[in-house]
Length: 266
Image 1 (tube, rainbow, N blue to C red):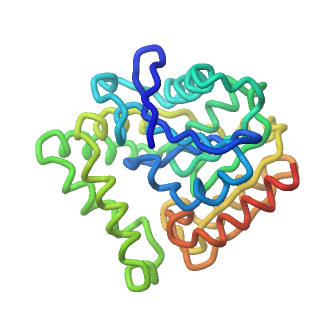
Image 2 (image 1 turned 180 degrees about the horizontal axis):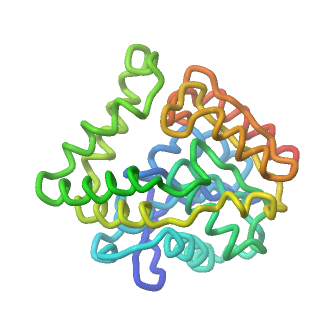
């Protein structure tokens, strides 16, 4: 059951289950909290699990995404914690775009962090070419709808074996993409194109950190994620086998085991 929670300038849908030390799961683009279903089910037995739909995504309000920045999404996460009465430090777990939000959360709300998990994400800013492609997709989706986004993104998101062994995972991600409004996709593509490079920030991260990457991730490759882990003092690094960019959905058992081990060490 999702709660609808009012925060400044937006209304967010959020899954809030379990008791214990809080873990905040932040989804990738252009998805929803539902991508974390296996992790929510696993960890709710021992932790308070908070998994929002970011503004404009999933069941959250659409009217609040005319313009948005990655830093604003981090502000939304902090406001959500306030609205839910979460005063103690949280473990922030973000995938891809959720990792971009995580870096801004570290920068702005570091005192609210117990630990951070960075899944299949990037610290580098977009290249000019990558940013141009985002702007192009933003234009196209407003003209042609979200089907073109699903067509463009789905082949890049998964390990080769996933489509054959777990077609239901591919279908679930496709449904999430198709359910996302063109306005949200366009606004957030601009936000991601304009996000800052945070590679220089990595050595300043002083909370326990887990860096997770799917072995076959074509978007955030293993070597790039390894470099992120190497840049953060004391970070742990785990490669998830039989998984691409959507590792928490493609190999939930391995991701859940890594999360359990990490959270148990805090």
